Amino acid sequence: MPIDPYIVLLLGTVGLAALLPARGVGADVASGASTAAIAFLFFLYGARLSTREALDGLKHWRLHGTVLICTFVVFPVLGLAARGLVPALLTQPLYQGLLFLTLVPSTIQSSIAFTSIARGNVPAAICAGSFSSLVGILLTPLLAAALLGNGGGGFSADSLVKIVLQLLVPFLAGQLLRPWISGFVTRHKKILGFVDRGSILLVVYTAFSEGMTRGIWHQVSVVRLAALLAVEAVLLAVMLLLTWYGARALGFGREDRIAIQFAGSKKSLASGLPMAGVLFGAHASLAVLPLMLFHQMQLMVCAVIAKRRARDPEETPDPARESAADAVQGQPQHRALR
Image (cartoon, one colour):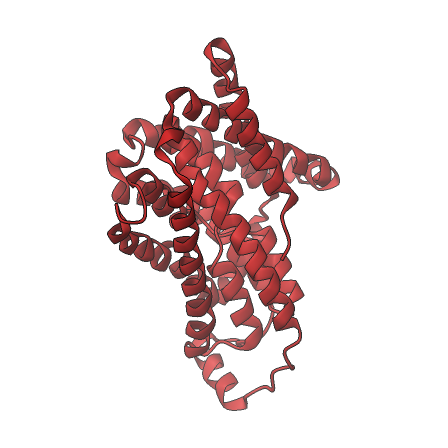
């Protein structure tokens, strides 16, 4: 049951914001730096995403469509169903954060890592995670506008403009400049990875500092946090079961089912935190708390599942199912994308 070191850093950043929140001029400086960091973060996302790989991935459209439906349809439906838990288990701010959690895209790195450990379809996991992140830049703000409304942090036309300027424009700039900077990005992947994580830590510090100065943490109790953890555990269990057995019902082979389970049941902290900073503003600290907790939970649970899947016996090909899959897709169902 691994503890992600980055979660420790995030919690340390929250503690720093609680003890030494940015105030006055310091808060303005932190806010400006956070805005620049978010833009640079999405610029790097655009520079890293291979357009050719994304287009090649369209060949496996059934798998990617399944992951997108799990991420942006099934998850939000479950989030809306959790509305019945307010106020018995969750406060309204915690519920808004939980609902936002269900709207963010899937992960890329951890989905790939767990799919590889479990001997699944790694190329499909790469493309599925990339598609989810790309679609999420546009779809998550739209879903937030439709489902969260003004109660979710004051989403408005101004928020949409901020999303375009801070997320979409830098991402497109990274894509356009990729032919010239992809080599540099690849060579300095490790250093830029620290920049990624440092940017997110800055976003977290800014959000929680503002939350401290506004006194919003008085709205959260230990009992409410325990209830939130229990609700998120049920949410994760439901999605893990749906992605595994639902993919089998749809006729996917073992390798594809593994990719669907890990890509379709997870949520991206790296994408969700910057989006929350833009969408929720002063309320971002409570909005990202459910996402931070869910992120650690999904890593711990999926690590155990991946190791168990790795011990599964090799699947015996079924000629009848392969013929049916060929007729639907025009290619073997189990073939990995190159």
